[in-house]
Image 1: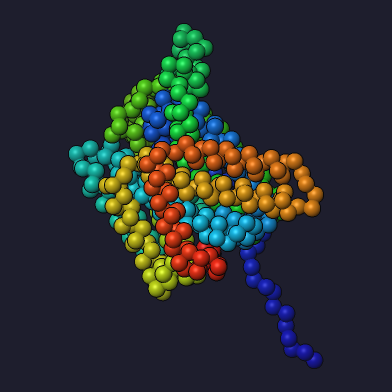
Image 2: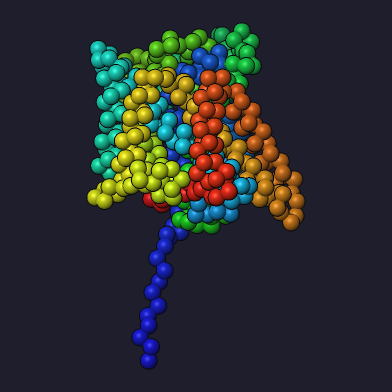
Length: 448
């Protein structure tokens, strides 16, 4: 008699429902997503922040559809460089991954900047450089120790942020209750104010507003853990993108009704939302919003630094970049310590070298390349290679590519120059590493 016993194959369980995915997406993007970048967009776009948020949502909607559809094809990969590399060309996939590296590295940098500025609102007598060193070191040390917030804590924080948003709306309603005497134009100016509207300014503001949506693509990484992934990944990605856009538009509309189109002082753009809150809720609301945005960015900064370190580790492990440095992990913690320290150093130096606005633009430079790549991959897979052609499979990815390309081109010249230099360095390194891209380079990151 045989003694062999069949052993069940271990793997991820499909336990996540559509609602679970939506909650995860909201936690990733955060209910207060536009509050950090609000002042920067306001100054750039002449007060038309809500308009830029809605315009950015158009490009993100089409891109969300493409992400959802590509997650059906590659349910375990879930990344732009995989989609582009597999569907179009490994060299283009490599360049997409290289652009994403800049995106990942700059996220903890801008979080360091805004956290330092917001903490100065609480302790104004302490200089900015002290907080910059403190936060860059804080993020690095915690990540070196392997400290990681749980999903439950993130959900509680998201719920708390939602309550703060509701409190803010209550103060706004009380503030504008008797402002009907100003006429309908007063309430439509956040969308279009002829005195301050300039298309070039709104276009550039839109290129910054996309920062509000960064992270929605993370839903695709749960493809192996969700019920009916072919349906639910698509629905959750699109729904979270639209929900984030609508909620962000309502938040900044409320702020613009209170503040108007006037610019914020250059040294206070990172604190713009708390400043607006102070105008309607005094000391209490100012510090409530300031603390909420601060906590959100502390969480984002920690998570972004570890995510960037893991991406660099995945590249180093596959010898896409020097394996001896980037492909090492600390045995005790399982953390790629070299990468964490390097990103912390970049965040610290960058906090003194560039502004929050420039950092956000550079981050979006890499993000838009990834977004355009995903749309292109969806077009190739679902239209060019499809046996049966469908108009929507042509229109949706093409529209997403064109809109994202237009917004990407609207980035400031310094951002485009710096981003182009980064991409050029990637091309040179990749060409050298692969003998003219004749060999493949992998950007696959390790699973968490």
